[in-house]
Image 1 (cartoon, rainbow, N blue to C red):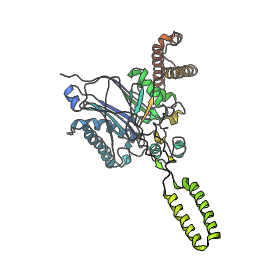
Image 2: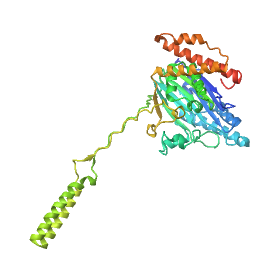
Image 3: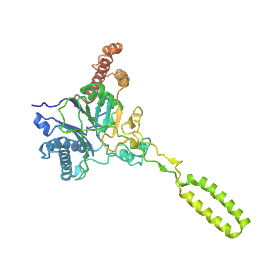
Length: 449
């Protein structure tokens, strides 16, 4: 009997540092045996509600409750059709609740769903929450943000450099709930390999944490630590919104039906054939010939009389026309060969990094963007800086924390061979300090799971 895929996963949703309530929701449904997995697969859902405190929370909870149920009840065999049906069912459930209660009118939510089955990975997506995949150090964004900023960049009406100044960040162009009909993006199927790491997250995370930081965190840390650290990092940078993350790491995966190929690289188009030079490039030889023949025609006119002059002028015209229409193979316009667009640096301004890619770097299909995430020193420096500032704030504010300060100092003074242990230990310390901070300011267990 074939075995289920082996995977590790962690999830967390947090209210953030500025909001009174958490409007994010998540859901995880795992198949219990190979037969159900091969037919339905595992399901992971993230929803980010909007429309007022209680209303947004209700909309996202309806998705988390109704979508997995609709998925299980669907008679569709194809994962793409099943995803469409389940997401549309969740949309109707939200819309029906709003119709029944006028106070809920206009409530909505984003929805990002990852399905892992024997047919590969499929994604259903509406809104600006995201699904990423990390493979061999390359972080790929598998979903396209249905946001005003991304749409303006894609349409060429704005650029990554000025989109923040021209268009608000938190305006989305699609969501579940307000309308009875909704357009759903279905991405996939994607291949699934051992070692792949998937991340589903709301924009409360990506507004504060860059793709480069996400990729390196997923690459260097176990799933539990990476999930908590990403949420805590967003909160350390202000936590302006609720943030939610589901991290799924693939350890072993059965063979996928059929052959799937997906890549973040799009080969450049072949060079266009050489084109003849434009007519202005031929004007120089044409003009010289016309001047010379005109001088000869004038000479004939002076010595031979008007008939000969008229014939000469006619000859000049015919020769000029012939020279004008004759292609000149010596001068051609060779269009430049298209090349792959280089990665845009993710190292600058955190509030822009999550959406700052040039329009030309949006690929025509998923994966839409890719970011290399190889350097472990980058994450070590980031973690050390965050930890130093966090402990300083803890001492200044008099937080009571269980963090082992002496252990941190001893670990950081160790030799270079223990960098991995040092990094993991410091991340765990950050997570411990933030847990104590949440407990002291919110009460135990409030706003986080």
